[in-house]
Length: 284
Image (cartoon, rainbow, N blue to C red; front, side, top):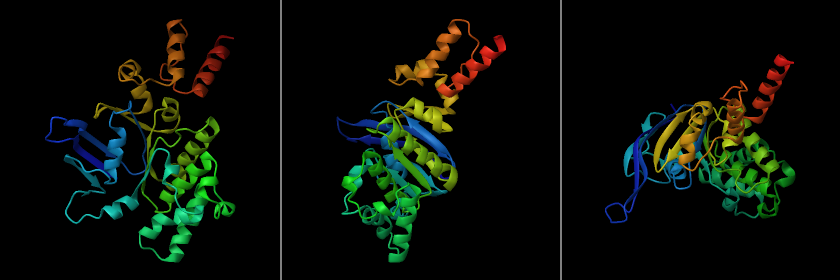
């Protein structure tokens, strides 16, 4: 198993009258090579949880094991952990700061103490993975488009060769084409590199389309954990948490209420189209 989270608590203002739980008794196992979606209303604890997975935040109680070893064990290298578990924050272009794209992507591997040759090789490989060729190397990262900035920031994390990639709302603020480009890139990294991916998202359509497992957080607790189809069957409970199912779910249930025998587990527009066409052909 890549990551095991055991009875994790995180409390702010511990021991004061302002004490409150950000995470409460969260237990979660993430296997190598999984593509997991993490959803929840603002303040649900999903971003707090991801920042524990690479040691940016320390739990009040509980434990996190990476490849069977507690990250809280004495002498455990947090630097090594952060090289293996890469975190791309929301609006990752705010992480860009160097004078040119190539130098920016070199920053992470340089901090790992690698040779100059290895640093440059990793940066070139990472930029190629995100679709930025040599014509971008000497450009200022601040002159790139929104989608290109997002790619450059992701490349900076990939250059450290993480085994786990966590993306916190990677499509926030992008137009539909930019969103599809970034999610397509993430899907390719998962498929072609065998990378474990954790995608934090507010978009039910995105997680329905891309992830194989969905974890739902509410008020610091894990409330659902299963395939997207399993989780979205609870769409009425999700609504009570300030969430929803993909829009097509509501269309499907409306059709079923009108006597149209369509599968209630349909999650995407494409699936709905195919099901409706199949019914039409059957009844034609």
